[in-house]
Length: 408
Length: 141
Image 1 (cartoon, each protein chain N blue to C red):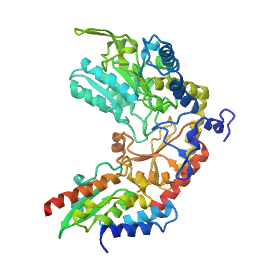
Image 2: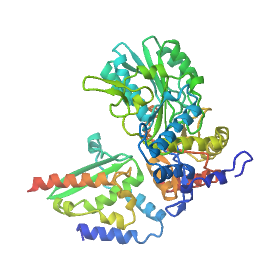
Image 3: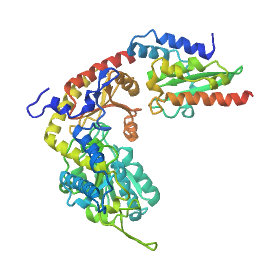
Image 4: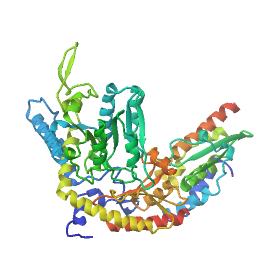
């Protein structure tokens, strides 16, 4: 399909992997919420780094090191501008969203005691539950859960009831990886701040679809992963307000993160280096910046407009299949459809679709509390990206009908 | 004929009749229906094989020096795959089970299920079958 604002055929040419065949069929890649595909421009940045200026960064006096350092720090500026943080030193490079959450959760153990409470949502990925459970174990603080409704939205009245002066931290995702729900984080941040609580937002599922303004949101911590945004795996961002990050103890000790080391005492480097011990994923960080540049060249307005059309088209088509149950029916969603077909295990559906070259994810999607909520073993999840097409959705529907015929 | 290798050969020639993946999968689904179903009292959490995205319950017992397996799964394809394994390994001496390999899975064109990361856990099922055989083998000798 060719829209006047968006030429998907041309966009698809940016992604060499999309012309692959799988099981003899052209691949239909609908597992974008797990990881997005990588455009040639980003792949070239990675290979170019190793071809032309592979060197360790910071403090190197030689030419290549300076070139690599400049590219690495330029990426930080790109990310700062994209997410609109106040300073570049508030952007910490991590190995991914999970790493970012762990930096904050481990640092908080010295600030909490058994009278404190932490609030988490019912629709979190395990990576935004387990680190905090570990923190509760070590600090004695209690974990409280913001419940959700059956259409997959947080119940804000219950959030208000749970929120108190005991609440020290609220953490939740910007967008649910299973349901696609875009949570009202602006409102949640405001209300949390009114009782003095800090807020960490897991933006891994939001970043590919939504341009987030960190200063506008006034969020305290925000994490994301590059590989969800057409970037490479193994790299991500932790944003934190400068004062908060200055107070947070370092996560890992090592090179790069020090100011001065003697055997009596070590003083830590300033932000952001305090949290970037060891040699980082240099090519990954540089490619992360390139991926963001790429997404901005497509334009987030175009991305969300087109993806909303894909979502609407997909939902309407899927709903026509007999016995379908969709999980996550918020009116404010990213292009994710989680579903089951009556009496068929999601694993069976995924296996049949795979034989037809269609990649979806099946299972609990690392969010078992959501599965417990709906009392299901898992779902099939089709997650779209701006390089997907309506024709591919037609193939999915055809595949589902075939799977249903075979399995029922 | 009831020895492991000849059963494998039977399965290989059976699957060679199918021309495409769809017929193959339809056959697997069909085989799942003939599985010796695990008794309810054995369909408990401790008999669930870990490493499968779908639930697989496997039970084994020794009768006259031979191992008999029964199983169930909440996913149809997984059930078919474990039915194939049971057809091969059930009613066999533990020693024979331990000596046998699973190359026939590859030969019947289900290679993708042998990957250790595959969510259906075929590798875990085989491991569990061999564990039972190992224990029974020690008991006998």
